[in-house]
Length: 270
View 1 (cartoon, helix red, strand yellow):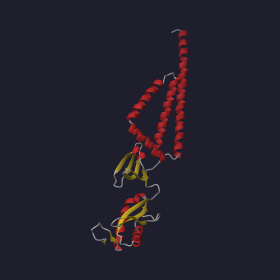
View 2 (tube, helix red, strand yellow):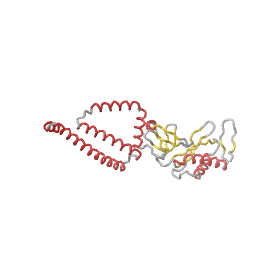
View 3 (cartoon, helix red, strand yellow):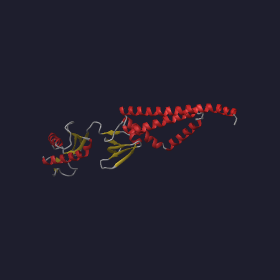
View 4 (cartoon, rainbow, N blue to C red):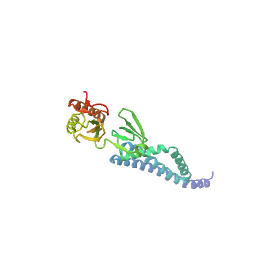
């Protein structure tokens, strides 16, 4: 190869070499800037109210998106036509989105739950026909532990799109037990007996105070409602203890019980 040809080759390669060096410099600086940005984003999330369960996912998605944009920029600097790659990625993304439509709706609902926090781990919640303590909030599912120790795996799209009753928000839940009282009994006397029994029940909170009231007037008896408040984790123990203590108190005080039509009234056994 003659000197003139070598000089011509170097002259032809010089612009590409400069482009390559510039692209490498942009790539290195861009990766460094993304790393610094991710650290700043992580610190901002720690100071925010965004649920910690979603921090790794948001950081990972942001990092991937920024790196993809950086690679496209570097490829453009190298003179590579990225339009075809963008079209292919868009088509692939559309196909994947259609195939995973249900999963994506669960994912989106999971992100919203973790950000807006209608409930958190440990809360006692009711969604549709299910009630239980929240044991885990995943990206796609919410895991509940039912009172009978069943594990309920609920898709986040169902949990996020339904009415959620959060029994733990106020720190106490109302426990209600219903009892039938004959029309012939003295309600103030029965009310005093039951109120005292409720106050002595373990787990019943002093505030709000427990109360007894007439709920409905049936054709054969008056239905009473015993309402007390307890901590969410004590709901079922307090519910059964209320019923047991109410029965005992009525028996010890000789209160008559209302039976079905055609059966005479009688005392309550111990």
